[in-house]
Image (cartoon, rainbow, N blue to C red):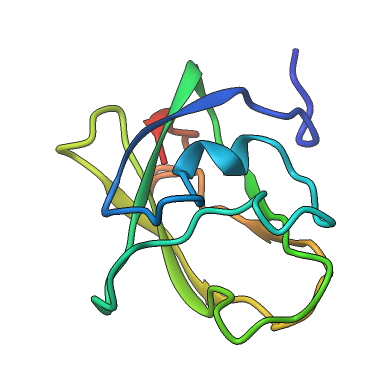
Length: 124
């Protein structure tokens, strides 16, 4: 049986866009000292997104964001997390913001429905 600290394996399913050297796959390895260990979009559109595909159907209880070793004006600020069994049917489970520092941040994810039952996800 898994614990709340289990790391869930995932791949990148899709994203809104990316810059030449900052592919979405860069986030698969958390390396705060490497400036290329991040995903950056290529345009200035206000909404950017990345869609993760979990290798196994999972109950997502928390999510952790790694950061570069230095604060940066381009760091993600406000964000929303959606989950779902398919990309076409996603439910918002978190709306928060990150501090502009180098410290990893974890957030609890709503993972129970109104009846108190855990619901699984395949996409984040």
